[in-house]
Image (cartoon, rainbow, N blue to C red):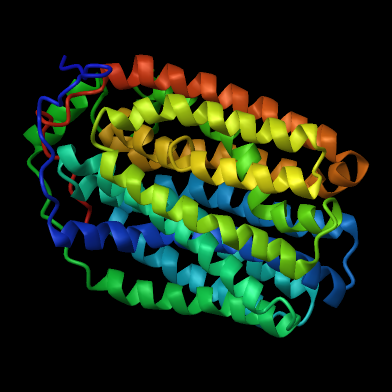
Length: 435
């Protein structure tokens, strides 16, 4: 079996240029990540406004945050499986349309009950689109460019956060009008993406021999039957990527949903200052995510993980030691936005596509997404109450989770990536099932 050296000084196979057609596939697929992040952060940015306008208590605020994450979890589980069974192209187009409907309901919601229904629809659709869109990118990409194209979806994820927080900052004094404009832009973006995806041209399916060769390289059985995920070739990378993503994501999801809320309720910042702090540091993350895309198909991808996972842990230690004080949070945001692109969700996406069996990528990654987002939902539900009880306890708990994610990431690099086939010699990947 071909192996990838852990850190060669000069890559044996130079990077190949990627056609514009494939960047378009990556961008339209990346809209799943954009809308996922934008939905979560829009709820976070608007949470205090919803609380006042709908007269919500602390537990209702937690429930609204939890339901979006819980629905993304369920959607990931169901959507990834449906994509493998009925065709990734078909599910790919349906997901984004359903998201648009949910975003419209959220935007027009007259009360918290209708808001809850809209979040339910949009969350399920966003979750279904995540594993499906990543599988579509992986299917369309030549093996030597797969990491770059998959990691580009993370650029879209960061862009979703940047756009929503920027809008939140501009509209921070407009109340419910601003909140509706923020979620309304999600509906428009989803409808435009739906139209463009429907016209997207994808490569023809490869031969059965090519698919069989990649499956054999990963020691994975052929076919998308459920029984084919209950074997070592699927379970080991599923378990490892799940542990990494769930431990890292507890911290990322908490600050994604409650970063503004924490700055307002614990650090004493105003709504405008809180959104401004988030906005000021996010461009750093966006630029560095582009850097990650550039190195994603080189040994530097995993070398940088070693460095920045430590920086990330230090960032959370500073936030914990200062118990959420404003000065400590400023230092935290700088270090976190520097480290997150190299030791975050982008790594999870790339590692999953490189190590999971090709025939069941939608199902297996949907399962890890679903289990992780289910945990995030449970954490989100209790976060406002825990923050009110002890911000220090909350922050130290997150710091421990970040340390655990570092251990899981090192295992993936040192063991699983070493076993994955050399992308330069691997066969073409699965073609996208056509509607």
